Length: 99
Image (cartoon, rainbow, N blue to C red):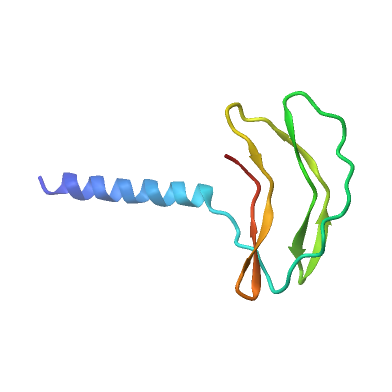
């Protein structure tokens, strides 16, 4: 009879680990601030999509420009563009997401 609680705990632990892995994101840290954003012309509005502006990404020890693109709209949410946040001497990338 003690197997049921143990089995339930094991299943819950496995489900939590699987869910965490599904939502895991790569942590990106840069040693210095990104350059100022580039001036980018937003295309005309596109029905059913939100514009995600271009940004600097950290790649192989240097910042590289990633141009803006369209994100399919999620009804009831607003798009929060990705951005860099300073933590001490380093900069951390916060991935764009729906909020």
